[in-house]
Amino acid sequence: MESGYGGKDEEEEEEEEEEEEEEEEEEEEEEEEEKFEKIIGGEARVDICARGFWTRGQRTFLDIRVFDPMAASHRELSLEAVHHRNELEKIRTYGDRILQVDHGTFTPLVFTTSGGMAPKARSFYSRLADLMSVKKHQPRSSVAAWMRCRLSFSLLRSALLCLRAGNTWLRRVAEAANHLLDLDQLLQEGPDRPAAFYVAPPPWQAPTVEVVITALPASKALCTRVELRQHALRGIAEANVPGSAVYYTDGSVDPERGTTGAAVVTGQEVLSWRTPDHCSTLQTELVAIQHALEHARHRREEMVVVHSDSRSALQVLQQLSPPTDNVRLTTTILGLAQRIAAQGRHVRLNWVPSHVGLRGNEAADEATRAVTRWPTVTAVVLPSMQQGKTMARRAAANSTEQQHREMEASSRQAAWYAKATAYRPLLPTRQLSRADEVKLHRLRLGYRTLEELRDDFESRQCDHSGHSPDTH
Image (cartoon, rainbow, N blue to C red; front, side, top):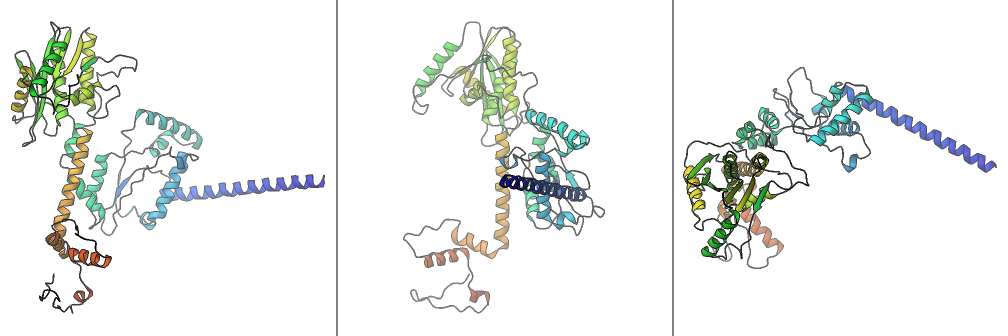
């Protein structure tokens, strides 16, 4: 009995100790929150921010912090706790660069935005803002503003361009952003969103567009022109039904000038459009199909048949999942097909091999080559995601090349390496020792010895050739 009572007393003591520890932890958390509130001035910051200070004497810095509240490491924490922890880590990292900021002596740049969130994420954060505002007894507007965690690239670029620092990595980033010469055009044209009149069909509904891609007997490279022509004629005969509206479409990109165009041929009528220079072949083919359906929507034939030599364009329109690139262009075509189907008509897209002597296809090809010479663009096409990536890679390559040229002009060692190696890798014909490999690499890099650095280098005669060495 005594041991039982003694055990009970020990349990009570342990519970009391745990309660005291919890109270101490809560007090510490409250103290940290009060310190945190003093640091940020009672105004919660957004999760992503770009700040630049250009007043003379102040060091420029850029701080971009992104966190995922649904990550595994944050599973047991609230969004506020995660944000709190990130802010404290930021303070520890930057130290005086944040704590000693005197807002009375200069003006900070702060760029933030809440745009671009997906509907599901927006709904989630909206509900979370409601709950947090009730729990914290704070206005919902301030809580919602605190939760915004998206920064658009245009605002980030503006922030970078406003930075006025020395020869730092921030300046390099700003200069790299300047190489995106077409960025203003990308931003002006806006996001690539679905067409307003397009309605995404439910999964159980049959596609409104019939796509016919008949497989060749062998690879196209292995088929003769006669075989390809016979295959195309057979496919056209099967696709065309009596009394149907028949179209031939084609898109082209001039490899020399970079100009692009699209064309549609129906009967004796030829329609052409000059597309922007940034367009890809896939986009020009889709533009041609789009205009063919726009033309067919005002006709009365029950069947609309479009013959295209772009397998990739038809495969894009054949996908059941929502498009992730060229969204407006693809959904415009599908939306036009929905409107034609609403009239009780049918749309069939048929693939034919290119350059096999088909009269309609050859006429469309000739029209596209002619329209690429037009000086004025007549059809607007939004840049694709792939083109944005290509532009970024090209800008990065141009910036790297420019920095490389500047390095060769200003660095003796870089100039020596370019002259001595022509940027070709070292491929020795036989296995060398570690010491010999080091010597070869030092010669290629223009390595200077200690004697050269001290200016007391004395040339020695070569034991093998009898010549004095050339210094570099």
